[in-house]
Image (cartoon, rainbow, N blue to C red):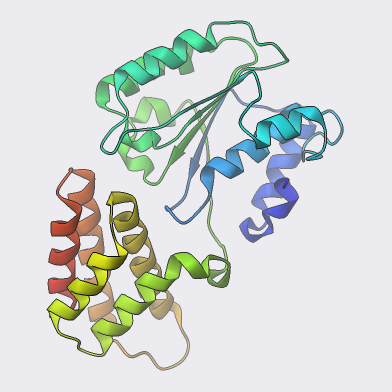
Length: 268
């Protein structure tokens, strides 16, 4: 793939390509989007666009650099991910030590997945690197909710919000949210919805994906021009309940409890 394959993000990819082609590469980017969006893949395509010499600003996807980035074996690529609950200070410290080393190629590239799950201590440690980055280093912070990042980090990064994608392109991710939504509309009993979710939602990541999908469906109904099966006040109420469940998950409430509590509210 290349940045050209992310047409669903409209003019954003064109703007990114032009900036890279003109040499305007920042030391740090925040890529924000919900859990259904492949933010890590997008960050790698940006890295290709920055490093590729065959098709600068886009990435050729054929040269040795592009192929290595695609398969996570590029020597100067460093990726860290959160455990189930948070991204801790130790992970950031280890990354900082790696970024101190001179790159084998042109630049060190760091991708911090789940950046919005960094502890306060980890965020403050990362801030030192963002304030005084090693020359040529490019850091990507991937986030579902930048509100969880401290303001001093936000002010030192270029923020790209990935949206305006087509629902059909995420049909697999929307299967469970659509089924749950329909069960609620059909006034199914709570235990029927609970049993379905027990089979389909087996971890916190799947729970977040469910919330993203439900909120997307609610927002679709708010902007639809045709007849809507739910009153506007119930839609707004539903969005608020979804956000409450999201806050519960971010506060490390058991995901099964958070989802069941949500269903009790929106099904009432």
